[in-house]
Amino acid sequence: MKYLKEWKIFENHDNIYEICRKYGITNYTINSDGTIDVDGDVDLSDKGLTKLPLTFNRVIGDFSCSYNNRLTSLEGSPKHIDGYFSCSYNNRLTSLEGSPKHIDGYFSCYSNKLINLDHLPEVSGDIYMVNNPVYWIVKDWIKSPKGRWEKWEYFQDLNIIQGSKVILERLEEFHEVMEIPMPDLKEIKKYYIVIE
Image (cartoon, rainbow, N blue to C red):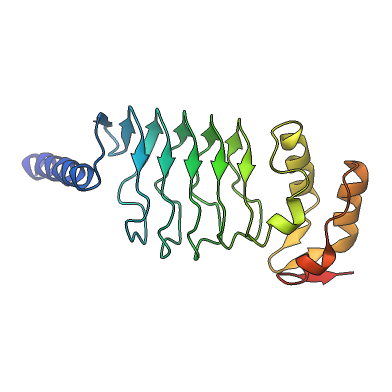
């Protein structure tokens, strides 16, 4: 039985080596839990992925999984990225669940179908999220790091977005307290039911 367990681990490592070779991932270390650390960039853009092929732990560089129009989940993303993270142009991506915990660079999630800010990573740089339903609600404060986390926490605490619904009274409270102009309700109503 011990021999079979050892063989399974060796076989899994072989699979990781093969996947890294297939996607041009170099300078990596396989951790005991099967995740990988990469000392450099990871480019999984435009590979026709439906899910990430490996589970990453840390990437000391940039990470991109953009232009995979069938990608529906960010599960397997690195927990920490020293560079930027891009998951833009994945037309079926509706949630940031599985995204990194921390990104030292900027975060790009253009042109997806993101409907809320749940699972938003801690991002040191700017956030770019044009062409997402949630963008029309948060566009006046989400991009710049200055004061963003205080706003994000308050925004989440108010529970403004509830599935496909936006609670107008709470949205107005948020913008009044944070002294931010109200977003365009016409645009929001294209994607959400606004409860007045």
